[in-house]
Amino acid sequence: MTETPPKPMHPYAILALSIVLPGSGHVFSAVPMRGLQFLFFMIVIGWATSKVAPEHVSFLGRYAGGFLIYGLSILDAYKIARIKWEKWRYAAGKRG
Image (cartoon, rainbow, N blue to C red; front, side, top):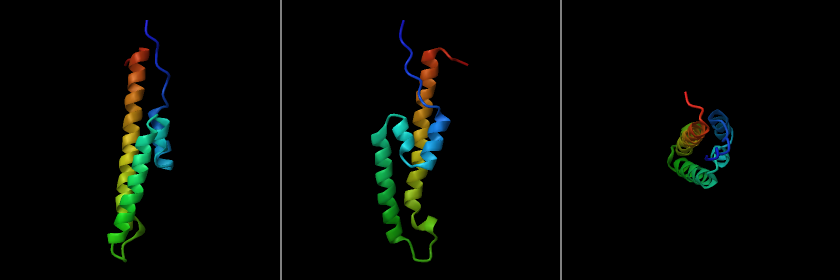
């Protein structure tokens, strides 16, 4: 009989972590390089957006590119965690 893989963190916990600290959801989902890539592009695209934005734009508008990548990283970390969670549930026999 095959062994059940170790229980991953709950996807909602990963979601909360990735909202509070960008990239940490990926770290706790065991894909830290992906989190680092998101963090890098968040900084780079946020910086690039700030250089082309007009002076009268709000803070959110000035760094809109970085906030876009931040939102995508939250969704990505949750998706990875949810897939790992469902694979674990299926392997553990907790269907339904």
